[in-house]
Amino acid sequence: EAQVTQNPRYLITVTGKKLTVTCSQNMNHEYMSWYRQDPGLGLRQIYYSMNVEVTDKGDVPEGYKVSRKEKRNFPLILESPSPNQTSLYFCASSLGTGNILGQYFGPGTRLTVT
Amino acid sequence: KQEVTQIPAALSVPEGENLVLNCSFTDSAIYNLQWFRQDPGKGLTSLLLIQSSQREQTSGRLNASLDKSSGRSTLYIAASQPGDSATYLCAAATDSWGKLQFGAGTQVVVTP
Image (cartoon, rainbow over all chains, first blue to last red):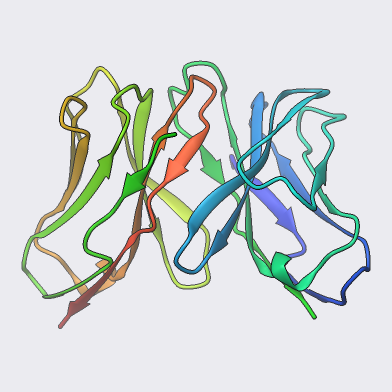
């Protein structure tokens, strides 16, 4: 089954404790991205990657890091989480150029930073 | 910068009534427009994708139209059912790789 998976689905952590949210897709997609969703603000792109070792900032990259060492994986790293990073996070992937089939989204990771 | 707006923010209709959801965007140079459904606390389910060269797409009771010149897309849901209750999001792809600019969504409640 074609899918995007994220882990963990729920996470409560404390300020400053480094964490990683994993994202994996099994569709051989070139393009992957991370979004955060906040009430009243909608979904905003954090980072994206057009292929292995190619990443770039989205609209709200501050406080986040990403890496793309393999085509299927695109982890989101919070080196020193803060309460304003409490949010619902989504990973997405697509075929890339032309985006003919649109984007597939993971189930989301709800992060709470206390 | 592309801005996507969805009005109204919330909508309540009785079962059986047709739903009309609006999405407007400020820059007509989009690659495609995608409609999603989101259930509370859940992920996004893609409903319809309209390429920039298309005027509409249909899937079952759902029909989405796209008018780039006026910067508008409309999602029609025929004969609404309580199971259609959810938040509906539209997103405009602003480049060929698929960077999406989302609207804030319209929360729909269909009452039995």
